[in-house]
Image (cartoon, rainbow, N blue to C red; front, side):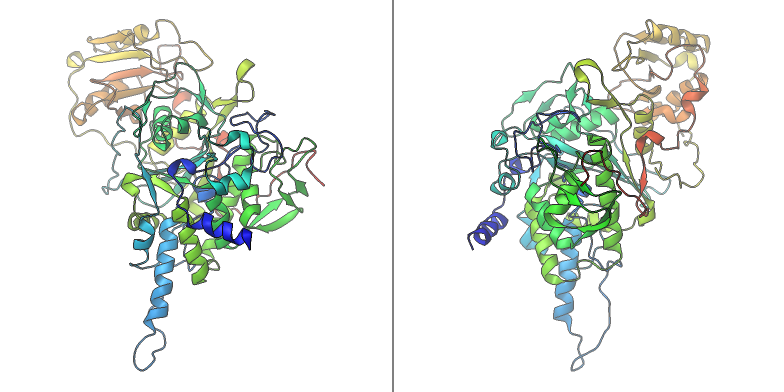
Length: 584
């Protein structure tokens, strides 16, 4: 009875945005470290909020869907005294509408409805989209005038709410700064034909941008050394995580969604079970007490509630016991959940739909532009257009660090940027794009080379390699030889994986494309940027030496790197490999 009362109080209470939570120490018996690497022993076992935002991380458990697959309530039906039984049908339609609207992730098999969202609107927590000082570039429309949609899904490890503390323990972490232990970018193509989900491992090391806390006014200066990516959330809120993604990828982010820890369990229960597969019996718990506690028999298992959360958080016990293995398990769960929802067998009970809607709106924090259930419904309408076999899950290609950064990961030179380029350029990750058309030539004619000013920057450095000395001067000389007599070297450092030609406004696009052509650089490298004031050639790490842009740097631009470990949404054959020492 007492337990039931506590649950009711937890469900009714609307937690503050800072009370959103995941943690490495959840389900751990001992102390929990917040930001340990794959081999760290200070962290709580399975680390990070792998139930976090969206998709497998928690929002995945909230995956949008009404369950009927069509997204529409059936018209017609028997009449009673000449009239349709509208009340019952209307109630079901409203509940389907709401569940699709608030369940943020992949499917949105939305129904119709109008009323119930008013009750839920006040529950959504809203924060600024970005806390960085760099404005994001505008989307580039396709030939039909459509633009892509990018949503950052965030899972926090904050341990401030009663429900999250009860689920996780680790009292020494209560009240600490939250960590963005799950980060997934959901990209919906401009024509809504395909969807990509790109995960960034929480152990990724990178430079943090300057962020300003909107509530306190505290300024967090840009970092001068590498910082683990999950620390971005503690620098003012989810808007700093958005700014960090934009700084690294250059991908314009339209919205973010952050999910509450305790809400994952409620929403997983409402969904009613998702099938997963393990190759051997697994128990994610070792002699030191590390692990999520997940215990499953070999083969297919249907999981829900806390067991689903355990799956999403399990690191120790899957593959090599790393955060990368956990990410792959999340992708498997998300794809399976999508397939289940689209079968039309889930969420047909009004009571369960009501529970899911309440739990999701209690759990979500969204950006202010998305801050309403009606807008979430519209988003669900966008998402539901994508068929399951055009959904692709991928992980940012990465390499392990060395020395003091051993166990942490870094974006893999070349491959990571290639993946980010594909998302920026709206290229499907499943390889099913119709013949890729070359970038459109600018309608604005290019000025004569001798009249075009070009700044050349040396971007050949990386986290592991020093920049090639005098590289900007050398390439400026190549441009001079092509008639660009106003091309000069710029001393501004600008480490970039791929060579690109940046321009600030549409009237200079033709000039930028001409500069690219003159050196044999792909025209697709000419990109609009608010960070330059004129045509700027950044010589990337893909062209560290030589007078000719290497052909190898331009090949396979439309192919997802193998290191991204892409997984198709329709693939139901995946089964998780088990780490030695975690079987029973």
